[in-house]
Length: 144
Image (cartoon, rainbow, N blue to C red; front, top):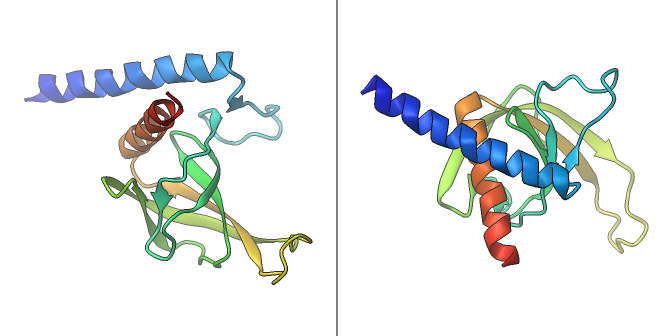
């Protein structure tokens, strides 16, 4: 049984490595200067409209890595609270909210509704890898 689990992990990791190379070639990976970057995994620019929370049917994702995700929201989320993210209502994973920072109001928004940048860490790195890989695969399929 342990060998099957290792094989599944290898498949996920191989898929991630392939997607990472494709994203680097296409300029979709944000690599920040080492002084600015505390994450151990590169960030992917993600444009998926298929990621949701219990409060929102779709969140505006800024970037995602194996470790976590950042998104914009009209709602404030509390730091150090759990948050479930869902991908296309098929795959869900648990995250912890690290920060929720208010953003300047959008001058083009007639309501001038408050906006927040929410940063979350995946609770389980393996689920983070799966969530990221599935998100990128789904984006690739939608573009075809």
